[in-house]
Figure 1 (spheres, rainbow, N blue to C red):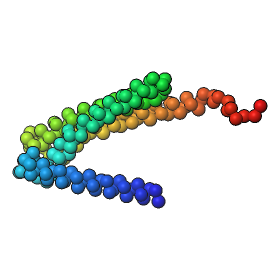
Figure 2: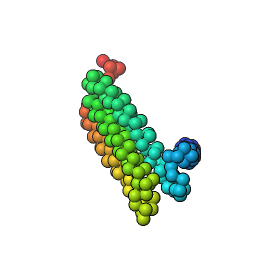
Figure 3: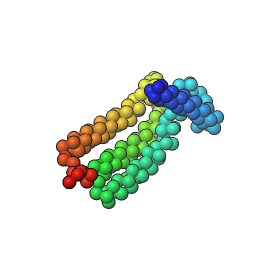
Figure 4: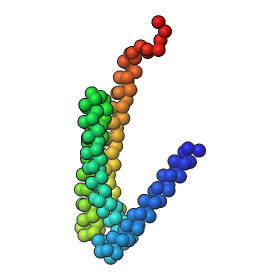
Length: 166
């Protein structure tokens, strides 16, 4: 039952984002940000690149917020949480900056038709792959940190409970 609910939410949100991209593309096209002689796929990819550029500051703000949380944990001398939060800070900052850069490059390449012989989807795929690789690398590193921490917690002896009878 829970899996069906999760699948329903994922499909519904995917559909909502697709409609949002299409509506955003239509508005941007009407306002003149998108050339009028683009195909539908060029418009969709251009909107995706514009969205990447526009939402990249959220990643940077997220990294600032996570960095503040890391500083608070450092004051509490929680080394494990500090290292995890610093890795998340680095991930947010890297993805935010890469989103802005790749979104700008993609927008330029698609709207100016720098490579007219190459299909738009190939340009999109080539510019999205680095984002996927960054996500994979950071997630693997975070998972290895968690496994190392769980092994350390299982090896350390637990302090005796105060509730034991004397």
